[in-house]
Length: 243
Image (cartoon, rainbow, N blue to C red; front, top):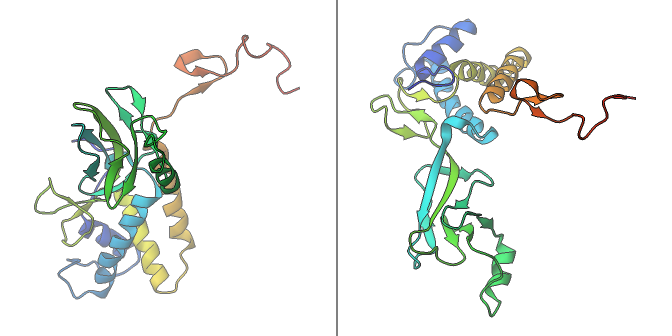
């Protein structure tokens, strides 16, 4: 399957980082006595989750469906769940967005004699489950998009995704250059050395990737080329712009 950018096994990223830091090139990460490789093998398990939490990367987005039976109100969260993407919950049967209820409104609504004033579907996360205020109707499908916490492809089973690197051939599902730059920053930081150069490189690469990781509407002053027309004769005069 094509990917938006290049992935690389963690061993390759560690070797590239060590080479650029003028360190001995290791032959292993998790089966070595090389202290620099050992440190980087640990640092990647800090960098990966930090990257996961910093942006809603498209490669970690998945769909979660709750199928109603008019009895069940609580649904286990999907394996590898990290967080829902806001405003993606919809009832396909009712063509209605899901209302997210906070703890205070949930308690207040439960105390009403009518058992609530929210129009279904309404829910909250509680006790590691997605709990609806009332059970979804029979056959009703309520769908969400969520971000997975699993960011590593297992070296021995490419269909297995996990949330830690532990083998030389494990592959982080983040851009290999971003991973390599992150390892350099963490190594220099650990040694108490100047990180400004690699940190700037990391920040620039991060900005490039987040910009291309999602599509955006093309803005246009005249609507030409398929762009969304924000300024035209219908809502702005044809003269006097900027005056």
